[in-house]
Image (tube, rainbow, N blue to C red; front, side, top):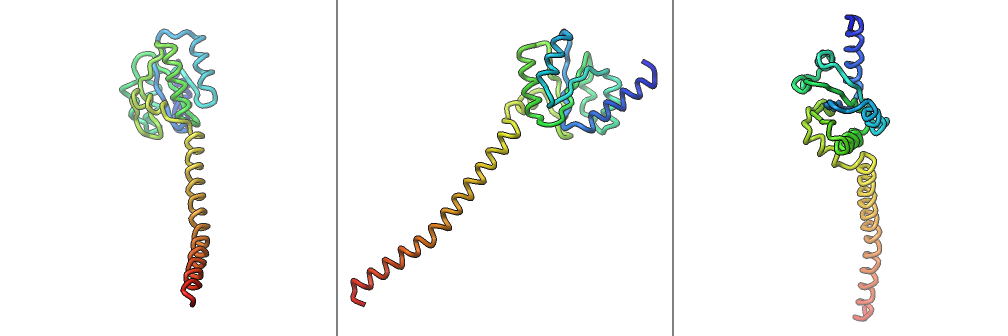
Length: 174
């Protein structure tokens, strides 16, 4: 690979690191081209999966301010650059790794935080962003409905109290 090609590759990798929410490093030793294509399809629009050269990736990651991947860049490496929902991409990678044990998740960086394979697996256990937002919206709506019920109850209770007081006075002959 000529110097110009290496410089271009480093610039593209640096751009990918800077423009993504997360980067998940994997080892793909033993996977066929068809299996890698299947993985790319399963990731869909959540992530871009690329086979990378370790030395160039170290340089690009360091230029992008990511030093956590240096120890993980050994052997055949590929990176899933996540642009969007990190949870969905982690689920796709985990499911593919279950079906194809030759794909090994080495670790990664999510929003600048280094993550080991166990943490990435835990991330895959989370519900998607849309589901979490829907639950939050539901909880907020429930709180608002409760508040509305309390505010509606105040005038009703006051009217019942006034009526009880009127009835008591009427009984007492006042």
